[in-house]
Length: 441
Ligand SMILES: C[S@@+](CC[C@H](N)C(=O)[O-])C[C@H]1O[C@@H](n2cnc3c(N)ncnc32)[C@H](O)[C@@H]1O
Image (cartoon, rainbow, N blue to C red; front, side, top):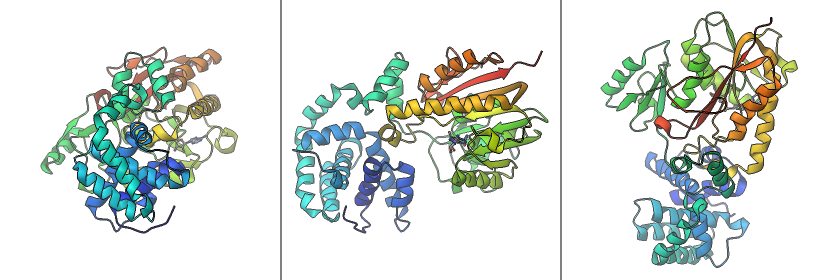
């Protein structure tokens, strides 16, 4: 595509969207690269909202775009495809006045270096305004288009969650709230709630995660009292249940096998300061740096190892662990609200590959657990394949393993483990299963 430097926020958003849909970049990374620091706060927020919105509704917007175009844009013109999607998104899902959505998107097209396409974008958007009802009705007839999910994922959700599918599909398209984790080494959830009140930040305690506070409206982290001093972190409540479930005791040695960026490692250290050691392993050196930053801000200590956790011969010192957290790499289908690009980037084949990786990690880490110890398996996936089916197979193949049932007021009991459906009590979709190792007889 023509490289045109512009401060036009629609053009910037279109380029970010293009990076995701044409180059396979994650939205986080596309935003990091594509959002100029010179942009005003308001324009940054606009670009972010447009990028998230288009990717959230991509499947439906693209269906409409293809109907409105005589022939789809060529791959090298995916920036124009992104501009078309952006125009349709503004008309269908935002408070931008339709005529402004059309004229501003056409104007962004003229600045894109492909002004020859301005007439096409103009025609597409005006056509949509004229025939909106009819086109929307066509989209409504196709469930995966109407709910903006790729067909394979729509089918997987429908198969795995026949009763909850409508709720899951609709929650996937909502914006997730902002949840804090209070550092119990520094303060309590109740006391922090009061300091938020003093700053006129509306919030409430979470019903299930003990250190969690849910904000009524997201704020910038520098508005949070004592954030830099380590009073709180940002973490979804479902993710906060991990430390609560593993509950390491005094003197225990704990492994967090897939630890970066360290949310759960830090939480474990906050609630269990008397453990003998927390070993945090991750295969991604850049993400290990994030753990370091978090530990420093929260004034906590852990042993950090950059390694493939499954290759235990490379990093394990042969001293067993009493508790292991395996927060396994997964499809992240439970956090689509936060990362709508997952719907576009993930494929059915990825799930099969992830299941193999998760299985390899479980197999490799089990021998590191001391007899009588516990391993908590966690994913932010809502797919059975990665969750209860993974644990069913593991238990069938390991006679020294048994399930330690999670009794809780949250989630749904599965054949093994518990599943939180995306949106339950404001939480991300998450799965937990706790395994215990028999003591030697
Ligand atoms: C779901 S994220 C972990 C989130 C983390 N537990 C937290 O709460 O902040 C999964 C992590 O697993 C890491 N990972 C993937 N495969 C791995 C492997 N074979 N060994 C170690 N880490 C791995 C990824 O780099 C990623 O940081």
